[in-house]
Amino acid sequence: MKRAVLVIAFIGLVSNIFAQSKYIDRAGSASFFSASLVEDIEAKNNQVVSIIDIESGELVASMLMKSFNFRKALMQEHFNENYIESDKFPKATFKGRITNLSEFDVTKDGKYSWDISGDITIHGETKSISVKVNALVDKGTIKAEALFPLVVKDFGIEIPRLARNNIAEEVEVTLSFRYLPMQDKK
Amino acid sequence: MKRKKLIFMISSVLLLTTIVCLFIYYKPHRSVKNADASFSLTVTELVNAFTENETKANAMYLDKILEVKGTVNEIILSDSSLVLLLGDTTLHTGISCYLLKDQKDLYRTLKKGDTLSVKGICNGMLFDVVLDKCILPGV
Picture 1 (cartoon, rainbow over the protein chains, first blue to last red):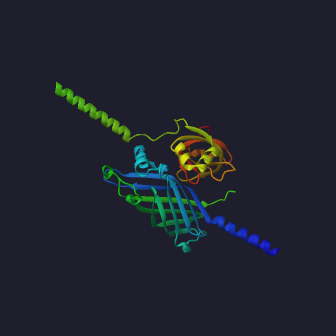
Picture 2 (cartoon, each protein chain N blue to C red):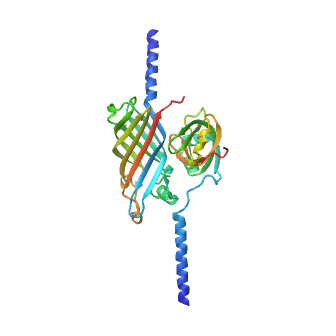
Picture 3 (tube, each protein chain N blue to C red):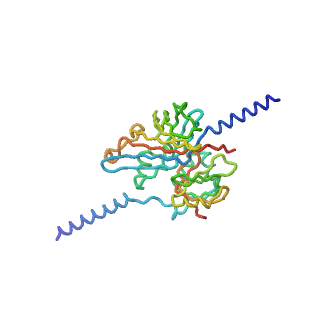
């Protein structure tokens, strides 16, 4: 009987730890910047959803391509219809893992550096990437920021010759998240 | 005389094309405020449509202005926007409504458990169904 109580208490403890190991951000931001001779193109998406599990180091992020906002409506239309084809490929996703998790401690406020490697899928094409992420723990919330280049061609996106002066072959991608402990809803 | 006419014609055609081009180039973003909703439905109806068949739901609702009625489960204030999570108790997922920037002050008046209507553009389904550029017509 005593043992049963112990086991139940243990399970309760473990599931509690698991519940608290997951952190979520529903309004993360992703932006990209393309610099070219003719014009600079910038777009921002403030609706990126990302979850990290600080026990296992797993990290996923997902975003809708339609949620990218451009300064000019016409650019946005071209992005959705001609390049990223968001009707066919509505989402971009990332699935990866923090490889230097042993250095991270969520209970200690301060700056950390994560090495994350995983697979990124845009426009239906998947590519492996490794990025450095700056993380900041502040009273139980985790802020994370990353900056890395992506080559447009790697994701099967064709830039027509006419637009080649307007769109860079390599775009700068910036990601920014503020993770809060995930509450399990039952 | 004939030449003058020709020059006039060519220049007016040029001017017209420039104006048309500029209009297309600086085409304004869509506004939810002044537009009527294409569909009016409840959270449950919208979520069910997406969980049953995402492709079909995308074809029907993507890029359309929807007016959705539901209960506020969670209110998130981030640096960039105010997000309302609508749902009901029986659903696992719900709707994330990203309000327009100028609606951010509504944070003070809204409460968890409020039942309200949200009007916004449907961007698809992620974790929840996403409504963008939202306003609250009743508030």
